[in-house]
Amino acid sequence: MKASVVGASGFTGGELCRLVDGHPEFELAQATSREYANRTVGHVHPNLRHVDLRFTEPDELERVDVLFAATPHGVSMNNVDAFRAAADTVVDLSADFRLSNEAAYDEWYDGHDRPELLAEAEYALPELNRENLPGADLIAAGGCNATATILGLLPLFEADVLSGDEQVVVDVKVGSSEGGAGGGRASSHAERSGVVRPYAPTGHRHEAEIQDFLGLDVSFTVHAVDMVRGAAATCHVFPDEPVSKGDLWSAYRGSYEEEPFVRLAAGGGGVYRYPEPKAVAGSNFAEVGFELDPANRRLVVFSAIDNMMKGSAGQAIHAANIAVGLAETAGLESTGFHPVGAP
Ligand SMILES: NC(=O)c1ccc[n+]([C@@H]2O[C@H](COP(=O)([O-])OP(=O)(O)OC[C@H]3O[C@@H](n4cnc5c(N)ncnc54)[C@H](OP(=O)(O)O)[C@@H]3O)[C@@H](O)[C@H]2O)c1
Image (cartoon, rainbow, N blue to C red):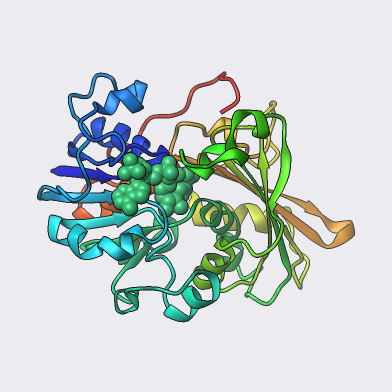
C-alpha cells in the first residue's frame, strides 16, 4: 500500500517516514515539505539517508492509500478535502479532528473551520476505542499527554475505582521533541538544557481530550524537562472507596494483558521499577504502573510513553493498521535500546 506523509520534515513527520519505510505493507510514496522541497528526505532526517525520495510541495499530492498529516494545528482542517481526495484513509496527528464537538473547539482552540466533519472523524487511541477504527477514513490520532494520562487511568474506570466525579491531579513531564522542529527559543538547547520548567501549569488543551474521551475533569500540569523524547504522567487519584493492591493488579492486568503495546511496571525489582520514558524510548510501548498511599487515601498512577511513537507517529501507524485491516503490530514491533543516553 502506498503511503504519504504531509509535514514530513517535522519531528513526527520524520518518525512517520521511518516507520513507513520499515513497514512490511506500506511503501513511502511521498513526503512533503515546503521548506525542503526537492531535497532528499535524508537531508533533514539523517537516520533516513538510505531512503531514495525527495520532499515535494504539499499542493502536489499524489494518489495513495494512506495519507498521514503531521502538520501544525489548523493545517488539516483547512486542507482536509485535498487530503481526502488524495487518499482512501487520512490519519491526522494534530488536534484538528480529535474533539467530538464544535463547542469544545470554541472553548479550547480558536473554533473550527469544518465542524460538520467532527462527527465523521474517529479519535484513535486503540486501547480505548479500537472497535471504531476498521474502515475509518478520517482518523485523529490521540495526543501525547492525553494518551499517557488516559492509558494510566483507563483501568480504574473499567474496574469502577473511578466513575468520573473523583478528584484526579495529573502532572506530566515532557521532552523537547513535543514542541516540534519549529519549537522556537524555549525549545533551543541553551534554554532547555537542565530545566524542570512548568510550561503549562493550568489550562493545557489536552484536558479537553481527557474530558471528552474519559469523561473526567483532571487538574492537569505539564513540565518541560531535559530529555528529547518522552512523556511521563503521574496521576494522583483520590478514590471514594479504599482499594487494595490486589484489586489494582486485577484491574490493570484485566485491561492490558491482551494489549500488544502496554506493559505493566508496578514496583517489581531492578532499577526501572515504575514506568519511565527511558524504558520505552524508540518503541511504541506504553508503560503503566501504580502505588498505594493508604495514609492519604491516595492512589498514584504512573505512565510513560515515547511521545514520538505511542504519543504520535506510532499511534498513527497503529490506527492505520487497524483501519485498513492489517495486523495491529505491523511495522511497530521493534523495542527500544538499553542502555541508552537521555532519550
Ligand atoms: N511532537 C510531538 O510529540 C507530537 C505529539 C502528538 C501530536 N503532535 C502533533 O503533530 C503535528 C506535527 O507536530 P511536529 O512536532 O512534528 O511539528 P513540526 O516538527 O513543527 O513539523 C511540522 C511540519 O508541518 C509542515 N507544515 C507546516 N505548515 C504547513 C502547511 N501550512 N502546509 C503543509 N505543511 C506544513 C512543516 O514543514 P514545511 O514548513 O517545510 O512544509 C513540518 O514538516 C502537530 O499538530 C502536533 O501538535 C506532535
